[in-house]
Image (cartoon, rainbow, N blue to C red):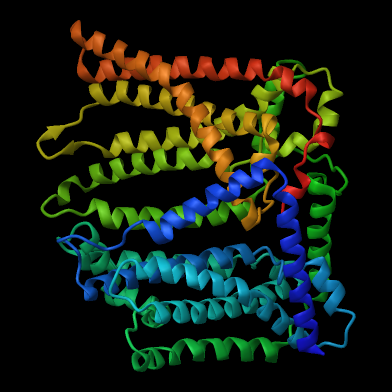
Length: 577
């Protein structure tokens, strides 16, 4: 009965997925998206050449580099998974799985086996793709990479199942145990950071990728990464004998996790039914299912500032979105953990250079500025507590005496204020750290105007990027992600690529005129005797002012779209998964 049920479920899933894809192909956006996705994946996996040229590395160097990359990826995967599971949600089941499995005389162990078997087709496809990516580097065996990655993912799946069920049990107990669900993830992250700190002296005078290799080979970090290093040996095997020897430890890890799950026999039915109901509500009701069903409880504010009885409407919207951002602790914790790991990796590979130990704070300052620029490009799409989260509530917002431009401006400014404050703190810290590079001294007479210009540019770019994301959701809701955490399926990659291309074209159009004007004005000011840094700062301020004005004009032009927008007429419910 067990195998027949699994086979029947898989046949139904594949058939329904194919039918859904064929139905979506009737729409031009899915056809164009499918073509773009095929071209992109084909170029990445097949057409883009791998290791070639006279400066090609030896197979031993390729395997060593691939081992470091794989170990870092596995570390990151486990940290992110543990933070995600700290919410206590346990194992997620779809509504169809609940209806098929739970009424039948299956044990908990059989139901978990069913979930593991259902995840194998996706794992096999992912292993084949990863094998193509790694095989392009040269010096690696394609069958060993595919089989090794599949075995490792099975180990991580078993680990996530065990940890998720255990944390769900802690949360179900309530009280002090429920408040400790995030403690294992933070302990793991602190252990990683402590290992990196202890291994730091082993870098010596190495720089670049050699510094990362020296850091990975240090005794402290090697001891912490021992399980992941054993698992990466599977990917680096070149023949069957070495692969069989390297697979012993990962298979023992898998068997240990499986035995613990079977022995503990965690109860997960209640959480599974609740999560399945939420997933089904999102699919049937769309974004309206994300609305909270709890009663509104008015409590004393935790901050000393309060809104005035009267004033601009957009300030109230900014306040509302800032408060909403504070209600996302799990997601922010995950991103904070990733951000810390990224900082350590970049500092390890870029900061340490031979013979420049006194200039390490300056290098850290420049790395921090680079991270701020990188985060600026990602934050508008990741932080979606703005107009995109309130589109399902347009029936309520339109009933209020609010002008469209005020509402859009207020929704956008909440996210912009939070992002810009983080950038301001980071820029000030970078300005303090940057003192000299070689023989050149950086004094505050130059750093102060540069800091002002940089903050103006950051604010204008934040405002433009967040406005583009929100106005794209208003004009083209089928090509963007709406809501807090609604995932999109693989078949939505194409339309996401189209949406990204549209936003890139709009951003280029907005940046063109301000960039040319600011550069010309800065060059003209420098020609008439103004210093180099003040001239650049002046051009940056002019650029920021023009970009802000253009974005504000686009908001005003979108007011008519807001007045005509009707969520019931937009085909966006089926695009969410």
